[in-house]
Image 1 (cartoon, rainbow, N blue to C red):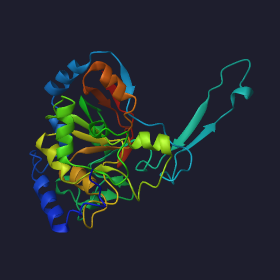
Image 2 (cartoon, helix red, strand yellow; image 1 turned 90 degrees about the vertical axis):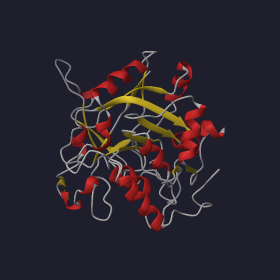
Image 3 (cartoon, rainbow, N blue to C red; image 1 turned 180 degrees about the vertical axis):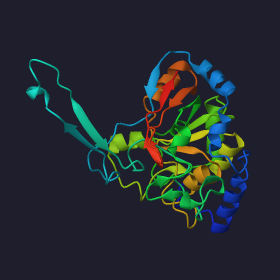
Length: 313
């Protein structure tokens, strides 16, 4: 088992070479603002619908956290508004109302990162200047890029299942070889336009052992694993952690996978999902692929959105 503490970090020069190599992968030209979503052609979406066999639906999102925890120092607030039920109008209509606010990019709630989320060397995806993100929001590459939703063939690669453990320990790394081995063991392919989800068991560990400071230690992908993703022309990448291992596996870059996925490849990244309800359905169906729909909120100029992906088997 590999961890970021017992494997030398990817050196700065090696990381920058990887970044430049992956940055050359997207083939859509300098005007492109959709990134990996371009792989989701109508034919691929139609083909993905054939993955539905059981007629079962399951959420890939975790419940929103509204309590202060070690991994959520800024929990969502949920306030009830209006009159409570015991004060409802006995002779007419009364509405129950509430209001919520989020730190979209927190370390607990499920969310999707827009292509404007990761600035590297003062640029965004496809060499868009970082200045496109202002105090009022993103003028380019906001979550509005995905306003029509994301639908396609989802594939779940279960790394704890591959290793015969309940979860990966914080700091453990998932390499490209691990992804390829998991795909072979699960008898599933990963190909153009797929929505790739990687399970490290983060949610199960959190449920059984309690929240912890994930900024200090969490399982995630080795930066080199993004070559596996790029070679297979994946459209979207998601994880039940935030994809990046901590401590970082790249010298001088705190979130190398975010840089490589969002900034270099133009992939919308989904963080802190949960797959523990999906796994038994995949086992029942005897397959690790499914139809998946992701619907971000339409918040103009936003850098991301709370999200509730739905897998349909």
